[in-house]
Length: 421
Image (cartoon, rainbow, N blue to C red):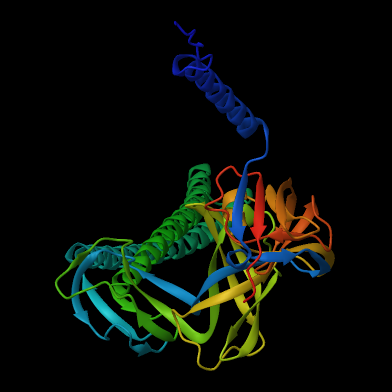
């Protein structure tokens, strides 16, 4: 007898499509929840740094590196070019003011100096010769004037006598007119000689004045030439230490090249590099401090260099009070420069989180301490220990301040408590 075999409704062929469909739906749902929900990451409590936001006294301070330099540095540049003939002191030597340091030779300059000295000598000789000629001419003119005075005096005597005799009809008209003409002639001669003498005196005086001015100018030029020649011997302008000497015997140095420098040893200053971000906030009078040998010393900004190089500018700082006794030139100091007075502010401890967030957001720990959520914040000023919080956090909040390097785009941290043994 035949038996009816029931057909299996859930055969493999019918189940597989259903399983595949469910899997696809599951993947779609998982993808949806992963993209629309908050991404989470489990972190161990012992491997993160949790800090509490507080309110307290805040002063904006930036750390800068300063180099100890002499209080003043005088640079030695070649006023005239030449060949290095002799070195009088070694690099690093302590020198006195006006002490010779090295000697240059310049044949062209020395020859020019000799020519100018000869020119001045010739001008002076010519002036003296002109003065002698003028003096001799004056003497001749004065002698002529004396002769004319004598002739005029005699002509006047004869004329006066003949004039009286002519009136008495004693002498002829011819004799009278002859004596009158001779008298008038000598009067005109005297006037001419006097005019000539006066004009010669004016001309000679003008000529001598011009020659004296020429000699004076030439002597000034000669003085400058001698000064240039004397500059071939380079001397210390101040007392101090000769450093960075750049000259060896036999070298040729052109005008203006740096030969070395003199460091004044009467004191020190600190030169520091600062990020250009602070250039508008750093000014003369700001104070800073540094610690050396467990003692704190203060500095004051005395000069700000406005030129920016590679994103940084420089300042010079002077010591307030007595500097450390063991400080040395070239020593590096860790200076804390104060940019503001102390004020009350909401404070957030510094940490590695800033490198990934730029201070724009942070993970804030929930009240139960089990999770930390991403929140937006705004930070202001800073010092070596704290950031100033402007928005997003309040005193008492707890935040994760350690590095976020491995957190990627996580929106939430699940904090796993350490199990107690």
